[in-house]
Each structure stands twice: as C-alpha cells, then as structure tokens.
Length: 156
Image 1: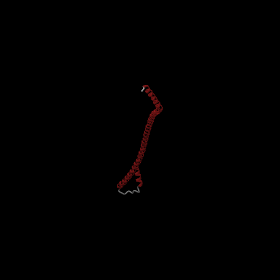
Image 2: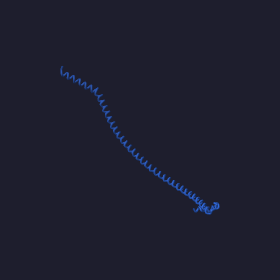
Image 3: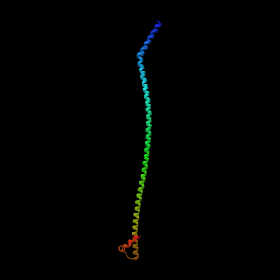
Image 4: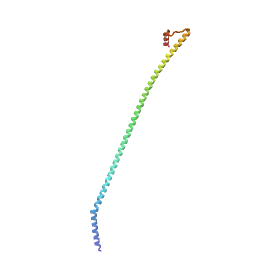
C-alpha cells in the first residue's frame, strides 16, 4: 500500500466527514446551543426582574409597616384623648352628683332640725303647762289658753 494514496483517501474521507458534520450535524447543535443561550439569558433577565420586584416589595412592605405604625400611634393618641375626656366627664358628673347629694342632705338636715325644734317646742309647752298646773294646783284648760301657748311656742 502506498502511504500517499492512503493519506489522500483519509483526507478525502475526513473532508467528507467535515462536510457531512457541517451540513447535517452542526446546524442542529448550533440551534440547540443558541436556544440554550437564549433560555439562560431569559432566566438571568427574569432573575434580575425578580430581584427588582423583591426590592420594590420590600420598599412597599416597609412603607406599609411605617404607615401601620403611624396609624397605630394615632389610634393610641386618640384613645388617650378619649380616655382623658371620659375621665374629665366622669369627674364632672361625680362632682355634680356629690353637690346634688350634699344639697339634698342639707335640706334633709334642715327638715330634721325643724321637726326637732317643733317637737321640742311642744314638749316645752307641755312641761310649762304641767309646771303651771302644779304651781297653781289647779287644772289649766288648753283650749282657753291656746293663744298663750302659741305665743310661748313662737318665743321658744
């Protein structure tokens, strides 16, 4: 065998193999690689969008949390104001009720004093009549001396 002929045959066969690979095998491999490259690029873009969305969501969450804290502080302040108003109102009602009770108690005391004075006047008048009866050793007619007894009661 001639080494030149073999080398020439092998070169032709290699050239046919390269042509065959470039014609039928290489294009699908290139398309698959391009598709994979595109999917990787899309995945990276989606990851970047996801990262951006995550940052935006974190900002929104921080804003919502801040707003919620402000609203909670406002509600607490409003509750404190309402509590203060309710306490002041309750104190005012208590003062009014205490004043009303005091006025009623004073009126009741005055009535009791008046009743006690009247009872005391009657008792003094009865004692005076009894004393006068004993002194005079005779019976005193209460009807006849009603004016005298009334005047005596008024003086006492």
